[in-house]
Length: 173
Image 1 (cartoon, rainbow, N blue to C red):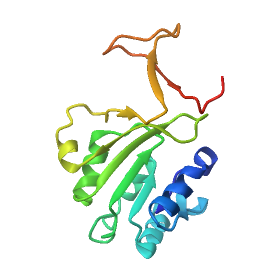
Image 2 (image 1 turned 180 degrees about the horizontal axis):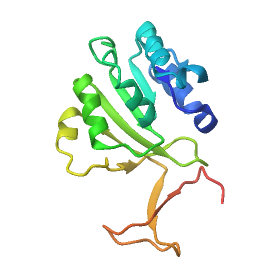
Image 3 (image 1 turned 90 degrees about the horizontal axis):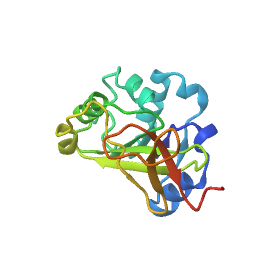
Image 4 (image 1 turned 120 degrees about the horizontal axis):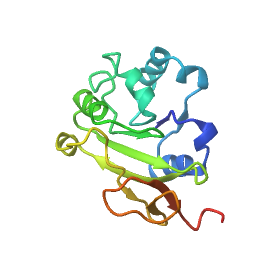
């Protein structure tokens, strides 16, 4: 598992526990100098041949500039998690063009929680059916409540714009 999420934001045990205990995999933390150089990062991926990639959308976009970022060169990849930024439909479709048999996990978190709060898992077929440019946020994970509120903190009606508030017993008051 290659974790390219920022450890300043996402340094928590979820990655370690899920990777090593639940999946029986090796977790590779990507050094910061690799995160800033897409060519160097891709060379590392090609050397290690990970099964799962954790990326922010911007990093994924930069990696897609190189044709080697594909199932042809990375045949073991089973899933790519995109987190930390708004993710557009065209990016996801390009990922599926390069990796047609994988799943793409769209994940969002709150800074205070430092773990996934909301997400969805897409297949190529589900991505092909998307009608909006932006990918839906998905559903809150267990033990998380997600509420959309107006400027006064009142819940908004379906279809209205608002601020996303994450509620959980894992957060302080």
